[in-house]
Length: 199
Length: 199
Image (tube, rainbow over all chains, first blue to last red; front, side, top):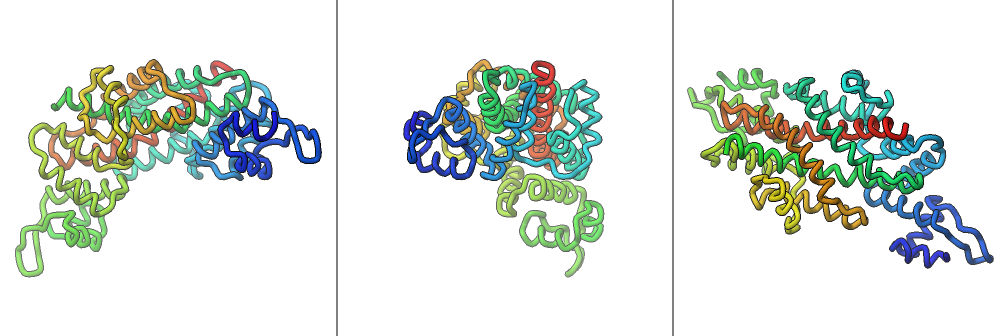
């Protein structure tokens, strides 16, 4: 297909597609003349992923380029695409040493890469609770972990395995856009449970 | 106790305590002379809540004043304190009509106030998924709701019922500081589940 058809197929404005090409987010098409090139389904999938990274994930162009390079380098199990996409998404885990988070992952028998940013995010969140004098007990975290695991099972089941791009797109969308869903549901459930107890 | 003792008891700098008094976030003490006043345990509880609203909840002084007024007005079941605290916390639910969110709450038998901000947060999050062509199915949301309910049960059980201030402090801390805990655990669980399936 031509670049105008690529734009049409994905709903991305033509000028934006050209910008992504210039920025190296989209690989060049197969040149058919000095001014024309042909694009295929791999460009469609890549373009959908680029949009997800920039518009859903809120990544900068430079960060999106890093994620794409990381996904392109990824070989072997599809599982690694998840790690590459996760690592690129905000919030970054800062530089805390995630000692308690690693211990908790081991407690639940979870295989998590020792440098996974989510471990640092958890550690930072637990320290914030310590700092306000409301430390999280292991028992409360066990319940949270059980709930997180149930949610993660449907999340992972929803990831298509046909291509790395499709998998990464679903991970980015699933990670970022379902977070506010889960948080809103938790607040609604708090209200419902509180009404049952105290209402 | 004197104002310096109030500051010491709560770990809040004296100048900050005076600032909260001037801003009306903390009610004045019982005057014992032209320059001195006595404070009691109710001031300690209120000061801890003010800190939670400003530092944990990230509220402005004006918003914190509104929440406190709302909590002070709250009579009847303790349950309403939760609503007052929730309504004040970011993110605001914007002005979407939460038709699907209300239908979902009814589907799960959850008693949620029809104007609860969490309904609008959910509606906005669901629309964002629609907009990227990945609409959330009721079946997936059922799993999320079940997980959210389990978490909400420990959250609500953790709220002390001794005073409105203590309840509101725990709700603010529990709502805001456990959100990143839950999100980090979800990402860790995704990695663990993905490793089991594809690793």
